[in-house]
Image 1: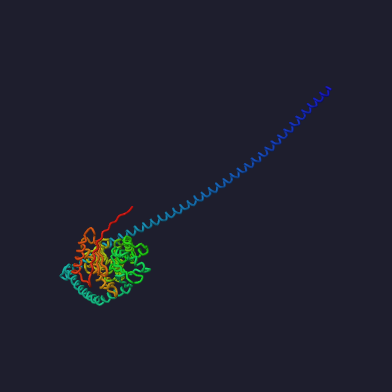
Image 2: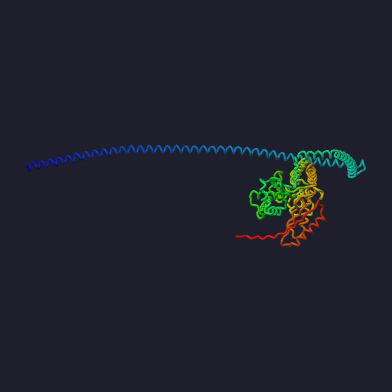
Length: 511
């Protein structure tokens, strides 16, 4: 039994040793196999990496070679350019050198010719002196005396020739002057289209129905009285259907009354306070319209650089008349005539047109002046920086000052053409307007008078006085004094009613 156990133990020990040896050999074989495989993979990876590195290196090398080649090409191109420039510079230097030599040779030649000319000139002077001496010996006269006699004979001959030429020219000018002048004037008139628009002293305000007339008149006529007092016109409300007549010799007053009526009727609120407010507003609007009219006129005529005050005065001409002829229309007509005539005569048409437009600005003064309108207009033009030739043309168009330029007679002639054409002016209307102006001026000459309005075609004169400047008795005396002065100083048909109005107003505001 013990032997069996020992044998078993020995067998186990031998088996264990054999197994360990076999396992060790197997493990060593696997380890070597794995190491060999790893070495092969490492070699493959190494070769792959080396190939990649070589490829990158070759790519970089080729890129660098291309860059170097391109730079070398650029350098070569620059060198070629520099060589070409150097060659061209050398050629230019050679040309400059040749030209310099040519110039030096030419200068030398010119100097030689100058010397030859100087010598010839000296020889010529000597010969002239010799000839002069021989002539003096032969004629028995000195050179100065001979020259004086020759000049005197030439002068006499020239005078005779000039006199004959002058006589011929004068005769020809006398024959042609009138014909040419008439031709220019006729051509000028034919080239200007005119309109025959004459202002009258009545405007008609149209209404939708006759019920509006009662509202315009107001209770006991207070609205119509307030409107007449504020505007200075006479408003005639009669049986004429759907119409109200506005009568006044001043076109601006008529226009203010017409526009005020239009706004009052459209608004519907018609009472004395509202009437005064609307009239004041309309007057401001009309002032703006006057300026716009002046601007449009200057633009239409192509006249630039006018002073704003002159533009305003030109706009005021729309509401003024001269012998019944609209003053703005007359000024435009004269300006166009002046431009055409100046062009025919070879003068500056723009200056002529400017002078023609401004020639009657003295007829629309803001303040009354005792000077003639031509002189006053020239002073206004000078005040607002117009050129001297324009001012002279304005001042001299009625021969009240001396004409200093050719613009002045052109303006004078064209003013006469515009005023003398058929239908342009009516002396009766001008006399009528002057009479109404004189009526108002007489009343305004008294102290305490604030406003005056001539209405009913000059048959009534309304005088508004300050309530704080005179009492009722002085008001009665004033009406008599004005009537007496009108009788003594004026000539008029029929009779003139003088109405003096004195009123007191008290105004307060509730806040």
